[in-house]
Length: 273
Image (cartoon, rainbow, N blue to C red; front, side):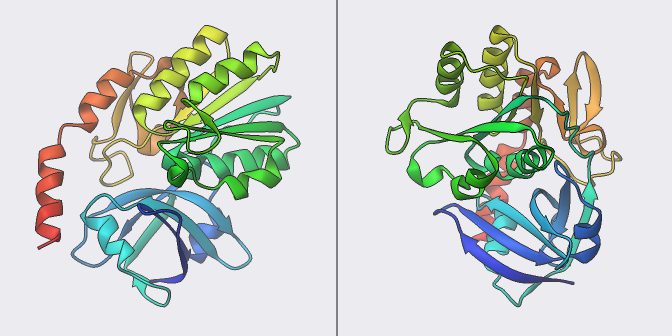
């Protein structure tokens, strides 16, 4: 059993939870994830490791309450326990000693982006970050990024905070102003990553993305998380979750992500009674 140490509401749909998981905390690196089950009868869901504290043996996860299992997770409080918390899984992010890197985080994508940017900062790499959301409420972790980057830029679809527009608008304006980036790390909704990669490719900036497709076992056995990268089949759980954005078939991935929407909605209705 894995005890919940702390919990915080980040907005109306997103929560942060600190879990005591000393083995995972000792071994994990930026870019990796865990798979948890809330209880013995629960389903397995993957969640990115947003932060870790090796000394205290804790791992921080951030999740959006959208389905049956995340609703069960949201019902727990500090002092409660999670039955399974397996990890670290996936490949650690390959972090190069570039001169300057731009992170782009869309919504909850800021969670997996943060440990990568923090690790680059610790390596002495200068970083900027663009955080995007539908409105101010959905821009998260701005205060965490501030100490580890030179600039935090915020865009919102409705203009309620930061600059009105989408993250690719800000990317283009930064490059047009003369800022040069050696690499972009873009994490967020699939459609956001797709268009961030298209913009970055036009600008000639290599771009890494982090994928979170349908995943069951996290060990490459089920094949549920297969993605086409550079014309080859890869498994996000063991080959990723980070991939060269130029090579990812986003259109295929988005079709696969929507395959079980009807079943997911049915399960959510059952979970609500």
